[in-house]
Image (cartoon, rainbow, N blue to C red; front, top):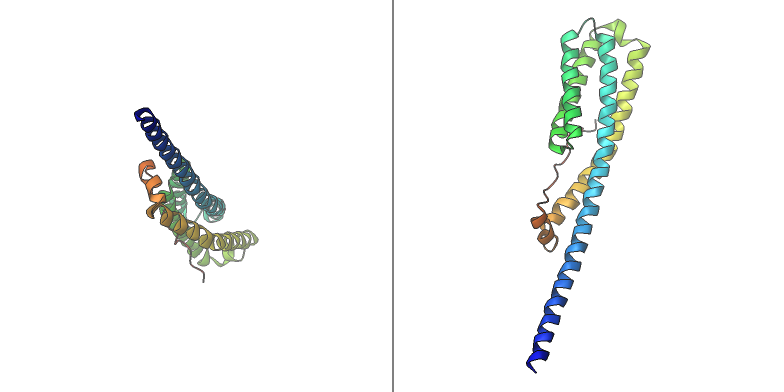
Length: 181
């Protein structure tokens, strides 16, 4: 009888461990899928900011004679962006997006003070590209923030928090960079 009880206890313990293992694995997969949605949305936004940096470089070339200092600031911004993007540092990239937008505003204001540049075909093309990237960013911003909300909520609520804690999963920052006009 005692052997039966011993094997029954072992079977129950192994069953509980198997259930916990399946639970942990499924919880991890759920969090992994939610995190993937966040990353996919951010990639779209990051690609648009890369496009904005390319436009910024073109604007720099257009205004180079009148704005050498502003152009060097924009180059530093581009370097910071590349470092943050390579490191996959979301918070860093969010900070740099603000800097990119400010650099673009500065150069546009410089161009605005020069009627010749302002009416040039090249400047008008840059304006169009900036508008297109801004619209794409605005469209994806809500998708990204929704995915972040879902992921951040999931890692804080039991039972997924039991998986997130030991894996040291942390929340993602929200993107509030662009506002529609």
